Length: 203
Image 1 (tube, rainbow, N blue to C red):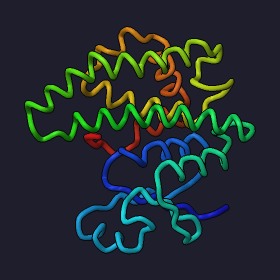
Image 2: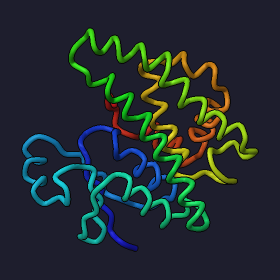
Image 3: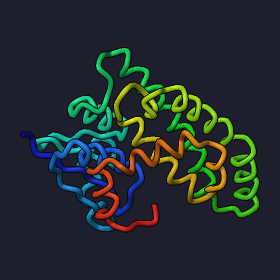
């Protein structure tokens, strides 16, 4: 079995989906959370000068999406063929688009602009994306967002919905299939254990 180290800041952020994959697959990994001077020392040795970084037997892989796909395909949390993997990738991309919109609001410093972005988020962006994800989940008899079993796309959806709950929890009330999907993720024994044990962080 290879040796895995996952490097990220002391947060959930872009590393949490990979952590979910490891936990669901019951694969040991070193969850390395670093910041400050330690990050300054590590940064020049990372592939792109950013985190997260996945180290596999000493080889470093950068890019959160790349490592998620690598781990999901390796541990049976992706599709069963190339086309299914491409369809899952397309869902992940849409989830990433919503995540970017949420980040814009969360990290905006100008309060007036933040309020304007927040208004658009709640009136336009969230209804659009949540409608897409609701349709995907509700049209799938399994209750997962793709296929007959849980995939890392469900973990990605769960992760981004955590951001939605932080700033606009009421928005989810109109999307019962998404809420049921989140409950199903939380009910997975390995994930339930991780949610209880993981370090408490703001995001």
